[in-house]
Amino acid sequence: MPTIEVDPGIQLAYQDRGTGRPIVFVHGWAGSGDCWDYQVLDLASHYRCITVDLRGHGASDKPWGVYDYDLFVRDLHTLILGLDLHDVTLVGWSMGGHIGLKYAHEHPERIGRLVITGSGPRFWQAPNAPFGTPADDVSGLIEAVRVARTETIAGLYANNFHRTDLKATEELFVQTGWKVPAFVGLTSFQALVDTDMREQLPTLRVPVAIFTGRHDLIWDPQWSEEARRLLPNATLTYFENSGHVAFIENREEWNVALVDVIEGKVPEASLGTDEQAVKEAV
Image 1 (tube, rainbow, N blue to C red):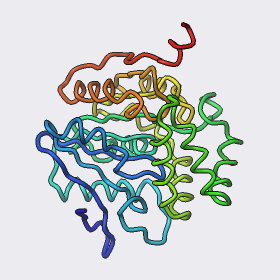
Image 2 (image 1 turned 30 degrees about the horizontal axis):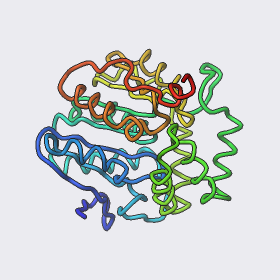
Image 3 (image 1 turned 30 degrees about the vertical axis):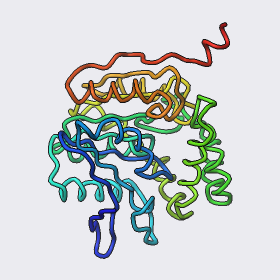
Image 4 (image 1 turned 90 degrees about the vertical axis):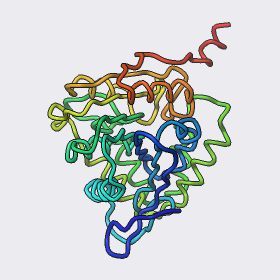
């Protein structure tokens, strides 16, 4: 697996497959670049698909320290510069989308467009934003990551999926999360909680496509609505048969929407059918 040195002696792992316009995929908290396997399979015949393991995750080095967004953005920038990428479609899921907003704000010169999926400018509730994860629940999650990381990861990933026919995929995600060291998981989750990008969004000129699962229980879709309101150049697409992992649960529609964004088309506002709702209605 190729790597790039992001600090002296510290290697960041990535995969670079296909040819064409570059897409850089950034995974979520306690994930890895492997979560984009279906996107690479479906898109690498026409696009250059680059998946990265954030520092502390997957096959990347995991040195002791605090894992915050400044670190992740710096590493990502080193990768994009090192591969000499231009007109990048930057795609981020969950925490990866949150990082993507920060990256696009700080380094817009290399980014042609940003796609965030299951993400937003902020994770939890605030006095001026009565949606998202309640503050007490966030405090409980941070403590749970500290004292019971293994059980917490299993519980969180169980809530990632709306569909009930993807148990093996859910288990794969859980096993990936278990490989992330506790100090990485704790400090990066704290960074997720501490980061609020709302003030920066009105100044972000990169076009942003916001993808969200209609049934997302992890990152409240109302934050997607708020992101569209705050961003000067944004679209919002709901995936109707998805929770937090629309790129898996509505894979075909999600990939079509991504291609539309890359090719300068506006994706539809709603894609896919909630199969569970259809079954219940019959």
